[in-house]
Length: 193
Image 1 (spheres, rainbow, N blue to C red):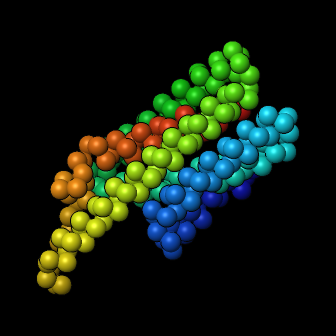
Image 2: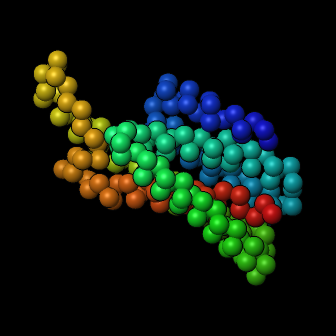
């Protein structure tokens, strides 16, 4: 499983080549697919299938962190990035703690398979969140390009995308990103105790 430890490096390369939005969706789909494979393996009592699912999950999951950081760096000026980065890490850790509390209770009261399926539902919700972030980021880029296209070619305006309130309000956009980070950690490691 050490392969997943190197996936963030490759994620950076892929994000540079294909763009953050596309790769955010691809990595989100990897997470959903990996969790689905893990659920199927658990339901069929197949450790090999479960491990394969966790590898696919890990490849996508670790890369999601790179995508989230890239979006934060893009949406905020350097002087503003510390708080959003800190909030993202804090909420992701809070999601991990919540997972550590809820998954064992679900497994005890029902069964381990049910806890994995709960994780699968969380991955679907997170993927929907990724799609929201995709749309928000696309609209922000579009608005930023409109602002820059109206400027002289020598005088390109540097605008913080979170300040382009004509399309979206700043707080709502950023909380989508924070919430998605929280959801990712809620199911990251479901029932592997």
